[in-house]
Length: 261
Image (cartoon, rainbow, N blue to C red):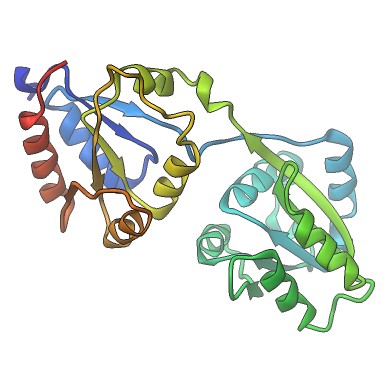
């Protein structure tokens, strides 16, 4: 039920996860304005001629390296516009930087052959070299536009035949209406649901710099891992809870204590 007590109050969030969705629904039902800051969003990017060449030679690649969660999502967005069967990937083995990328690949019912011990180009490159299968091996790196040059160089120096497929780029966040509103007015609370949320918020700090008259928000963490990471980066954890209900209760208490603007 909408409450006049929360009119003019706002809460910003960065990812639309299940936990955020539950908090959002509870707050919206009480009249809180929810502001989506799409800092983890990316835009699809591809060069048609490169994409066609890669897809035509798909069966010849022995390895594919996915450099991020977004590289997986955008690659398969393009892939399924061309092919109807996941088996069209051919016999290639899969490598990636970390467990978060692995989880997304598993959703496509794909197993990962190599997960980098550390999320660096050198670590992943060395893990691939240890397989003993790179000499004159055809390898595809799926990445963000204008990135992965270190990994490409490392693999090339180890005699691999490397192709790069760029499948996404960044938004100009400064032009996103919700971010422009956040900069102008601020918010009472910002929800952080993951380490990725915090990293994106810090990375885009210049874009998110609040105007002189904007509200300075309290920071709310939805997981222990997120809280720990926030503190390690010098960010305050003003609100946290053991479950969604407790988080909602604490956020509402924070909103009640915040003067209306």
